[in-house]
Length: 433
Image 1: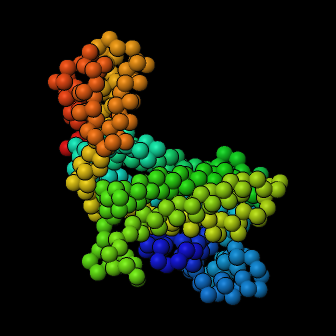
Image 2 (image 1 turned 60 degrees about the vertical axis):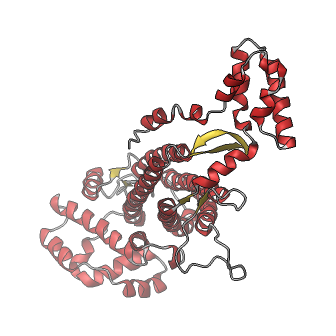
Image 3 (image 1 turned 60 degrees about the horizontal axis):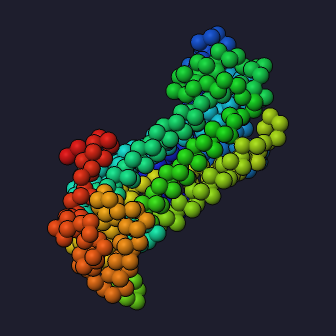
């Protein structure tokens, strides 16, 4: 499992050493209860099992050191606690009936916790989007100034993406919330489909329609790749914040705590370390997603090549994304939005962000598009290369003045023009003040 520094208690508890034993026991007891109700296990024995069954992690590990099989060691330790009635545990089952079904319970719980994280992250984005709905800044394409937009719109774009990720996570949780109690190769030779259905229903899982020795690993790959996709969105957001925090842009700043220090050498530094951290972590998630997809293809009815991989990638992916979402919620909630710098940066290109408006106005007034484009481009390059106001250069161009008055040209540089549909976009996302 990951370092403690990245593991939060809620998620860590789901993957801590020994927790899987509790879930294995939950599955074993559910099977025994169903069999007892069907008359396949004596009620008296079931009462004994219910009263005495418990997990002794130390004893399990002692036995495992000898038998080198974790589920057998678990069963032996539990039966030692129960006594004679313990012989009715695990009737007709294979190890993966218990382990895979229990794993589904853990993944379901982990997925639901990650959904909670996602919703909290979305709420933080919504709050800041509404606050900065009309905070004008320059849009950039290829890293170059393009046209004005608002910081609220930038956040709205992220909200829509998180909404899609919530839908994907819901689907992945459904995919992995399945159990199987079908025996060694999935034929129900020694345990009936009715037992499986009753056990899965009791545990809150869907029943796999067909299985072999294990639940098929496309389910787990779906789950892990979904976490990697969410991580990709988090990286996208963190990368944008890191770029906007660059000294030469400085339009936003990641929160910086009292007493925090940014550099051992340079006291002035306030680095976007959280955004950098989660950007790095997203790389781990993508690597885990590849490993999860490699686990789909196994020999015949099952081999064990997936097992060692899953012991690492499943807990690590859940713990990583949990940490990333919690951290980015803090970043967005405490993000310092520098409106003064946004205005200053918008003015750096001398009004060039209105070049398309001039182009369109010329065309609307009868000028051929290619001709209008050439004139506007010439004026734009002159303004940029000579450090002149674009509006002044355009207003002195006789070719342009044949189509537009100076008053009309002046109106083309009104930034409010670019904000006319902000409300509509927010309404589409159901983001209301």
